[in-house]
Length: 139
Image (cartoon, rainbow, N blue to C red; front, side, top):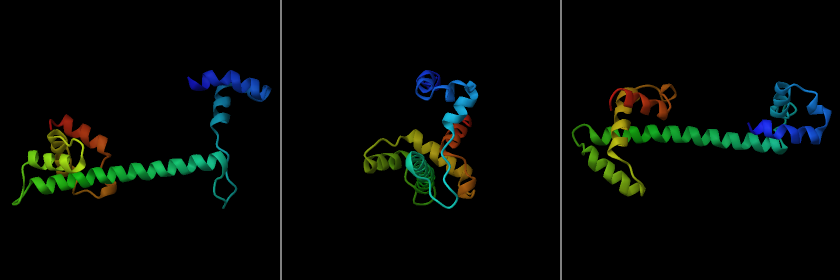
């Protein structure tokens, strides 16, 4: 809807260059990035957009890896010979993190690690998918 509101402004600023295009063509023209010359890094507004997107992709990948690391640590700390209770683990993690880490979160992450932990990291589902799957399974 934002584009629909912007189209009259674009038409007035660009005259028939936009007015002569169909709505789909106009959307395509507006969304088309400025392509860099081969071998040159993107620059200007497009280059800034590429840089921001790359940083966010890295941040998302890091968050995904961190989620699975916490799942693994939760599993390791709450199973086996030297295990602590899930309640104690979650309380200790909450205190250290300075934010809530609920028993429910701990249950889901531990179950997700049991289900997916043996898989190569690149083959594991995104955390959101793992959480939904664990909930569907009754965890």
